[in-house]
Structures are given as C-alpha cells and as structure tokens.
Image (tube, rainbow, N blue to C red; front, side, top):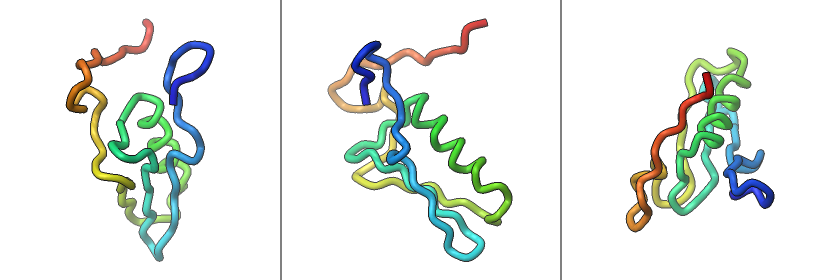
Length: 87
C-alpha cells in the first residue's frame, strides 16, 4: 500500500498471516489479486517465518488471490529496477 507521505510501499500486519497445523506453519500472503512480492512484503514474510521460533518443522508459503509475483512481472506495468541497500 502506498504511504501517503512518501509514496513508498509498506506491508501491513494483515498482509501476512500465520497459522499452525501440527508441525507445519502455513504462512499466507493476503494481498490479492496478484500478491506483489515487493521489498516490504518480503520483509513481512521473512519476519513471519522468523517468528515461528522453531515451533514448526516446516513452513508452507501460499497466497490468496490469483498469483504471487514480483512487481516487474505484472502485465501492463513497466519494470521496476531492484533496489539495493545504501552502502
């Protein structure tokens, strides 16, 4: 979602959910229809998996909607160059 002040995108807490089914954690990306894998969303996914703290033997990552993809692969949108951390 774009930030009103900077135009930057961020991931809301509701964008990623985690539920436990026995030894398996199901991590769901909830940004339909395309579930764009932007940098903030990838951080939210990483935080969700890291937050499992060894309570699951495996994690399944899935998404609501039609797909999960990188922003540059959305038809009709110009490619976005990858960002690199400042050195």
